[in-house]
Image 1 (tube, rainbow, N blue to C red):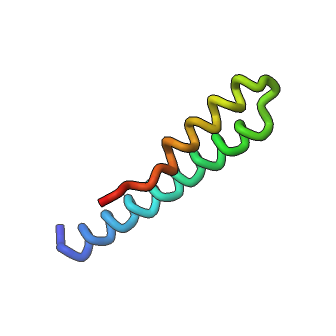
Image 2: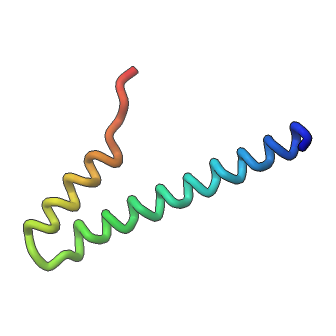
Length: 57
């Protein structure tokens, strides 16, 4: 396996991970708006806070 092939595979994996994370955040955001009960909307908003938390370095 060449180095270029490995770099290509890593780039593909990173791109797929980004797409999956974005889809997950969009799903939780939709749940925070569209859920019927206030408790579920509140839980979805708390989950969004965790997913989108900024890290202080």
